[in-house]
Image (tube, protein in one colour):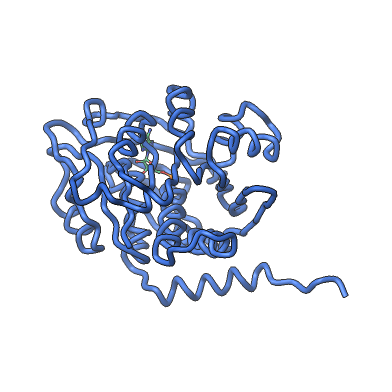
Length: 303
Ligand code: AMP
């Protein structure tokens, strides 16, 4: 089973209280597909400029990510510059240069069109919708976005959300999108835009999943050292959708397991810059952290 993902492939420049790096491999689709590749095959749709090094392409291919839908055009690759203070839950965007994304028209290779599992990673909601129109009969459509698009393209985003089954966004974005400070009320409003399931990413506090009449909570894996939170959200989504696609099961119990796999994958990404930590791990380490999260939340019923 393979997943179709559309999103950004980027150069990131990051400053955290613990270090600084310029022009490292980032982007929502890079994090998502690397994470999902531990569970299933991924077909990627994105655009890069002529400044993008072969080394990064070789890496994605080494993870079995299909790059038939990665367009290379004249110009510069998308660039994002962000800073984190001691509260690592909040990214401060310093610069966003859309570059080749300004004129990007996503065209799905024929072999991608029968995709059953689709992830619309964080990019312009109009491009997300463009991609969705080219998919014949998806079984599951999940989506991410960020404040940049909620500020700039809210109406377009709401149009995209009408076609989405699962929305995966962070807590501040849920409040912003719903225009409602209370998270529980805000979740109901956002679910009213279309997605039956809303997964709320809460950084070091974990994830909440809202469904019809249900709420599920999973803590973040407790880490003593969080180095750079960039990509945690996309890595979560990669583990989450990757597991769902690999198991082909969308019932509540399996959705819960998927949130734990997502949390485990994100816990690796934040330990180093870029995809550096994901390059080192294997499935044994993933399953070990899965079991530790299970123990973390295990408690007895009232006698
Ligand atoms: P997150 O998982 O939320 O930390 O996402 C981080 C990634 O999102 C970075 O690697 C950035 O390259 C990418 N990104 C930041 N802003 C945008 C944007 N406006 N559109 C698409 N991707 C973005």
